[in-house]
Length: 94
Image (cartoon, rainbow, N blue to C red; front, side, top):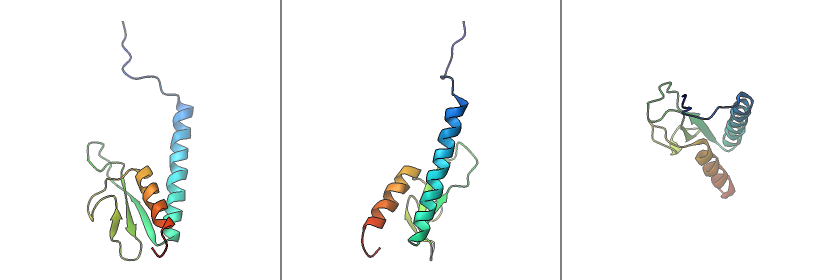
């Protein structure tokens, strides 16, 4: 008897999710750049590393981290960064 540990992943749906995530990341980078911010993704390739696959938001001019970590860490999801950027853009004089 075979036990299936995880459900079968449909490769077409997985490709769609990856494409949607890439489009979201790209559009979020563009919106951030328009308003003097920079979206930065962790460059870690080690799945066990705590910051793997996470993001942070920096000020584009002086590279100060404004959301999602510190100068040497990452920790925010893409959705968290999107919410922060949208909130920041909704505030006047920021």
